[in-house]
Length: 161
Length: 207
Image 1 (cartoon, rainbow over the protein chains, first blue to last red):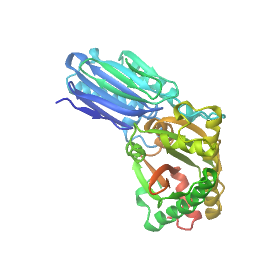
Image 2: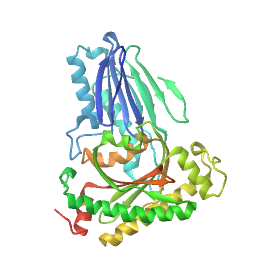
Image 3: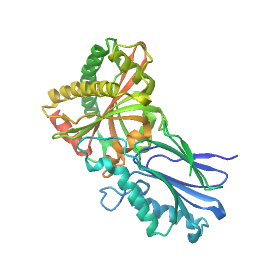
Image 4: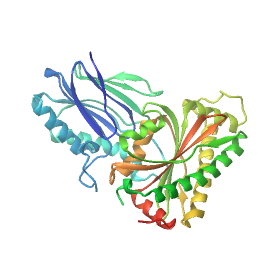
């Protein structure tokens, strides 16, 4: 029986097909899917912030783009993934609120997206597809069987990337 | 002071009292604006890991209207007023004295948006006034920011600010109800970790 595994905010999970991974309500956060299609092993990390380096409390590694990708890689390689086969898809990184005097923290979505891309590049994981930016939330479901990432929104359509 | 879980019963009660008076004033202001009886629930103080916060709003997927304020001063906090999407539409209809069901919250006109923000302004101002009286501290709210979307998405950007220092967030929540127990909205005060101590000290229940 195929399950849909829920991933919360600042959380990460790994699974094999036919199970799928899902995270609801991505705003400025980003859902990072890294997978090895050959063995149908996939992971989903729901990160909130770009970097664990400046954080005063970096204990929860799933919260940051850099440390979450490292944890995921480690976990996947230990479970039989081949580094050269790994691929990634990402979604999220919206700017939910606009203030007239825009503070930096409000651009967190954009900063998250940049950090995720940089870290994927650093680990040489090709980014096959992305659905980032805008000012609306996303709920995503990832299928390790096909590598399809389904993105649902309120009022901005539904798509598979 | 990072560890919210060590708050004493007395400190929790002091925070709830802020919620009581603050939200009581705000409920009265809201009732006057929409000319309907608005009640409020007993305030709750929750200390939650980030991942659990969307559950307070009916899940990360729930459709909501969020009105958000950054509050500056000696004890910076955030205010988040969350309305269930259909209820928000009805409130706007009441504010603009129209028939119920005319407002489409997913497609707000300029006028409707400004009515919604004004509602937020008045609620946060009355709430913060009560807090200032209690603590003798100044609280200055920003202009409101409005979002109509999934509860999780609206919370993301706000919680990210706390994420740099904490894994938990303290929420002081009061729900507004209309009629018997029809929840209209949730009012949240989210003090930044350092601010909590300032507020508690001002209330005479410091560590």
